[in-house]
Length: 382
Image 1 (cartoon, rainbow, N blue to C red):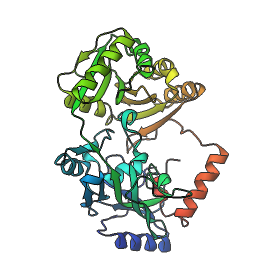
Image 2: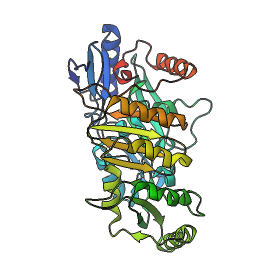
Image 3: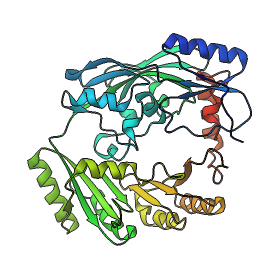
Image 4: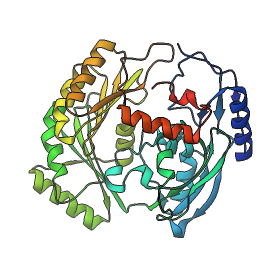
């Protein structure tokens, strides 16, 4: 059963967030943190809860271009941050779907990086600091403004990707990068997605590493499946990297005329389908995972080949078919989860359960940060 919030609260300061959390702990009311809301999942259950919107926690707090660091309040959009960075020839190299519509707090809470992690690393490695408010109203400042800023257990890392289940993020400090002089996108097209797997494997063993490597069922209307390779650097090094890749694969790539437009289309493909599945496996299992997913007759398939992470868009999904696909992928040592499903419908298929040891660890961390279980709506799908 999908629950409906009793109301939405819009705090404008950390102190107001803390007060809301303390009141919720006392009254036994759940809190569901939301930023842009684009990635929120339906809440299951019948317990009362409030949505806590971070939209009024907005604005860049501190930006030091010379230090390559930027701190912004949680509700600040990535589009606003990108505009500030580009004015100084810098950028944040994170490309999850619809990134411009998302907030920095929501991005950090979800932990999405996108295919550019191949060249720049995962988002969790670039979140240098956070301020958060725990389930019982404690205000914590985690990390700092430098890369090496902790000794012992790093409390910051569990927050990145915790999806609001441990605390409410109120601000984030990011490491940023200079913009590349050249952003080149190379294409290899074939009739079927599976025909591109061998080339994708070869990219992974090449003497140069692209900043991203993506398989996509199509890059535009009526276009064939493609392997999309992205290279960053100065003109001389990008040209040399392309020549090295082509020599290693024994092919000549097509060069995309507009890197930005194509990468945006690939980045967002299938992310807003009625049902979205996310799968992962070992890169060596790319072909087998593609076969398992194609049995679902998906609208879209996008795969980060270096990490073997798949996003699959479906107009509708049969729970039994999804369960069969999950079983096939799990036999390969991978996972499949439902990332998006209709708010007015049942979740598609069973969810994968953590092991008993993993479950004990998760429960222990949750009790540390949220002893009264106030943030249960963010955990309602487990």
